[in-house]
Amino acid sequence: MTSPGQPPAEVLAAEWTALRAGFVDDPRAAVRRADELSGRAITALNHTLEDRRRRLRALVERPGVDTESLRLALQGYAALVDQLPAEREAGRAAPEADGAPAPYTPQ
Image 1 (tube, one colour):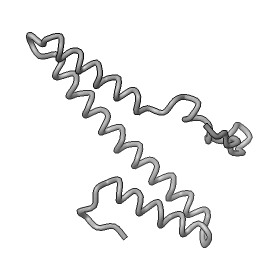
Image 2 (image 1 turned 120 degrees about the horizontal axis):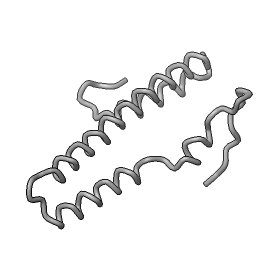
Image 3 (image 1 turned 180 degrees about the vertical axis):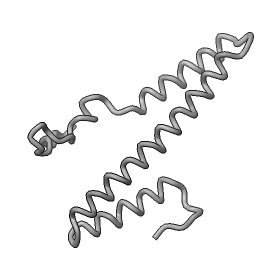
């Protein structure tokens, strides 16, 4: 059970634990809940990354911004990009055209 004051990551982790526990009793419902939960997690991550991007843009667009601030902004943008999954990681668990899950490939 989650409480209103919990950080979002803790809420997601608690919900994930609960839905995994429910898989044995109702696999289809657990997978539906996993889809909904992953959608919320992706949306939250997108909001976080977009907020960071907006703050970096505001820093760069200031009149008279100095080179050091631009260097720090570039590092900030690099950190944003580094948080994105690599293309091969993003697709490794995606279902194949025939509906079967892609084989797991350890990295």
